[in-house]
Length: 448
Image (cartoon, rainbow, N blue to C red; front, top):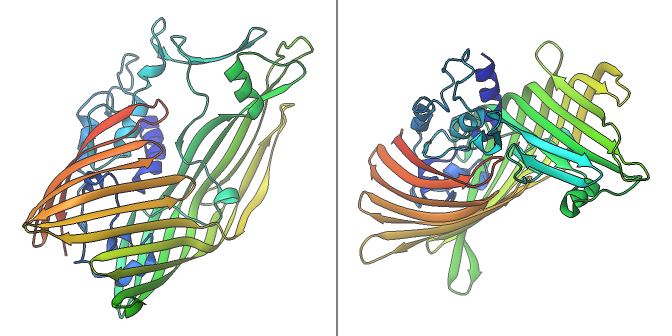
């Protein structure tokens, strides 16, 4: 049971943003169209046939890979001390449900061969500071899973729903009902003095050094209402016109669970640069059914221009947002005292998540070529560029991108009326340990 809880908690960071196999084959590129309406509400009124759309019902066949190897199988014998199950490998696989990972991230990188257990060793003494794995190899102090971000710094931007039920009304008006569970982040980071000490290998006298950890997560249900329309044949220059799509979206949510916590370990050096005993402090705010809940609203804006086979769109999520959570706050002070009390978290203001994408459809003597790119800013920068060559029912794809590291993609597919089959070879940065993970993505789509 513990394995399933930890695996499920960690996987929330990736499931909410799972990409289609078509997108993976183009290096993660998101093309203009209704599939991108969540990122840009103007695409709600955009013709789906211009660049094609991803499968409306993708099958996460990659989840079957969880049981193909003992390192990722959560059903292994938990009673055996020699069980090869690796939580990091399972997380990496489970958070990429459309891919079969060939070399998922593994905590073997931290295993001490003398004990057989994963270890991270932080040594502070008069000779300096060292952060190593169990074999004495230096590792980077900064690592994280997901994006640690609570209401205090992410305003009212709720995670993308795990799934949404679209409710079209016609005339450019639509609604969607979603269930979200994400915003998960686990991170560890040193302060500037500790970072400098690790780089130089020396401690300074009479100085405080601290290492902080943060965590966040939230879950609930959301209801969105979107409206988009098109202004046809807008003059751009002499002899050149463009259709302009504009859209707005409002989203309200009811929060069922929320977690936001920080913890800090601090040491102080004496006049001889010798470290004293560490002191610990922390604060945890949580809301669960029965002792807290949340509500919130946000507004999204979008615009897109389309003409002569080329489209450029800009989406702004959380142009204005409000969130309120009530729950329990637990505080642990450096002197060992613990206290808890009812508390609240509130947010109101502008904390926009930006999404810009563009694409062109180029007819060739034989077939059609679609080329595009996107970039965004949401707790971090990401960008992708890719292409798809269409020849009858055949699709050939390639692309590259950056999202916390280099991402590559190669793909192929067949698109038939009401049915599609897609495959892709893709890469992504290994969480925490670094390196490159290769995956094979397979998708079956049924359009309705």
